[in-house]
Length: 224
Length: 246
Image 1 (tube, rainbow over the protein chains, first blue to last red):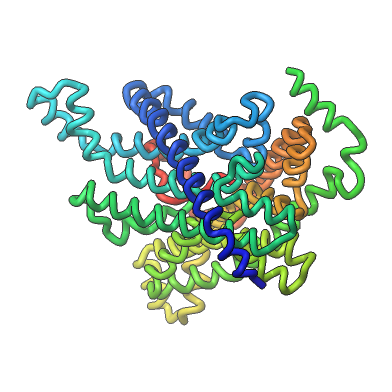
Image 2: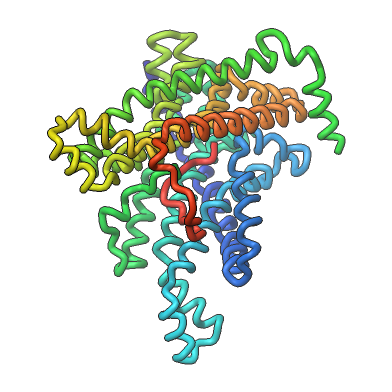
C-alpha cells in the first residue's frame, strides 16, 4: 500500500519542504496579524468601519483557495507574493474578529480606573487593554495558524517552488504515486497538530489567569 | 473590465453548457459529492450528538473529537486515506473516495456540536415536565427535546453543507468530479475566465443552499418558537472554531 523505502530515501526532501511549509505559514500569520491588528484598532476607535472590514474579509474567506492562488499569477507572477497574498487574506477574518472581540470584552470599569490613574490612551491600550484581550487574541492566533498550515499545502498548485509539504501531494498525483501523496499529507497534519499544541502551551504561559474552564472549550454552535 | 467580459463570454458560450464538462453536469457532480458526504456525516454525527445531548454523557469526548476534526486540513486528509482507498479500487479510490471521506470528516464537527448544544440547551424544566407526564427517554427526545432544538440542529447541518460546497472543489486536485475542475483546468490552461466562472458557480450554489436551508429551518421550527420582537444586541463574536477557508 505504502512504499516505505521511498519515504526513507526522501527524508531530506521532506525535511526541506517542512521548513518551507513553516516559513510560508509563519510569514502569512505574522503579516496577517500586523495588518489585522491595525484594522482592529481602527474598528475599535471608529465603530462604523468594522462592518465593511468584516464584510470584505468574509467575502475573501469564501473564495476557494484553489482559485485564489492561480488568479494572482498574471498580477504577481510566480513570486512568493502569489503564495503569501491569499494566505494573508484568509487570516484577516479570524484575526480582526478575535482582536476586536478581545478588546470589546475589557470591562468599562477597568478602562475608567485606568483613565483615573492617569494612563494616556496609548499606554492604556498596551498596558491595560492588550493583556486583558490576550486570551481571545491568542485563540485567534491558534485558529489562523492551524488554518494557514492547511492552506499552504494548496499553494502547491502554483508549482514546484511552493506548497511546502503540499508539493508532494501535487507531484504524487501527477505521477500517480499514492506513497508520495501520503508522505506529503501525513506530516502536514502532524505539523498543524504540533503547532496547535505549542500555541496552547504558549497561551497558558502568557495568560496564566485565564485557565480555560470546560464551558469555554465547548465550541460555539453555528448560528441557528 | 476585460476579465468581466471574459467571464460573461464564458457563460454565454453554449459549448460550456453541454456534455461531461458542461455547467449542468459539473453542478450535478458537485451536488452529488455534497449530498453523499452530507448524508454519511449526518448518519454518524446526529445520533452521537443527540445521545450526548440527551444523556450528558461523553460530552467532553464529543467536543474533543469535534475540535480534532476541525483542525484537519481537507487536502491532507484526502492524502492520508488515499493509499488505502486506492488499494480498494484504483479508479474510484483515487478520484472520489478520498474527497468524500475528507468531506465527511469536515462535516461531522458542526453537525455534532450543534445537535449536542441544541438538545443540551433545552430548558430543564420542560424536560422535567415531559418526564413527569410519563414520557420514556426516547419519546422525550423525539417529542420534546428535538422539536425545541430543531433550529439549532438544522443550523449545524446548514453550516456543514456550506463548508462542504466550498471545499468539495478540492476533489478535482486528484482528478475528481465537480466544480473544482474549472479551477484546476483553468489553472493548467491559464484560462482565467474559466477559473472565475468556477468561483461564481460555487458562490451561486452556496447562496442557493443557504436560501434553501433558511426555508427548511423556518418550516421545521414550531410556530411557538419563532421569536419576533426584541432585536438582539449586536456584539462582535470571536471566532472560537476553526472553520477553515477551503
